Length: 196
Image (cartoon, rainbow, N blue to C red; front, top):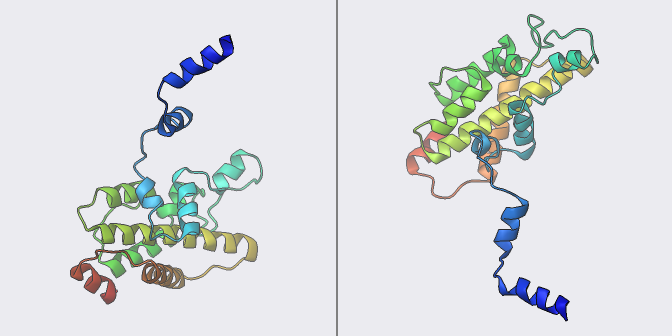
């Protein structure tokens, strides 16, 4: 009989599913890069690659050297500096050239060349939501393309020119946006996108 009383006391308190969820999954502070990395207009594999880059979890040569997997950490794209996430995105001459070409294409006046600052710039920029999402998709696609080209250089000993890398980035982003066209895009943004 005592067990029945204990159970009935427990059921007298009102519990909700949301309370149970909050207990199991506490709310944490949102990181500044989440909306840019997980933008709806990003191709999912591009978002995943950028997420790894933001967290500095890509298997760059500096990390592999630290784990004693390799004995040389020189950048595969430029052979001038140690390959790290910060170097690859966008201090390396190869990736810097790609970024500059993308900025010219979009008429983008941002000056920084560090991935974390680019993401912060996108998040704080006073531009339309459509442009923010497009810039997010372009940066994610460019990060993916540079990492892909770096791996091709490692495994196949081939490296595409920056013009080809930028063209593939543009095509991927345009196609994705056409497939996932958002609602409520202003006429001005539509005209801007069509002019790209």
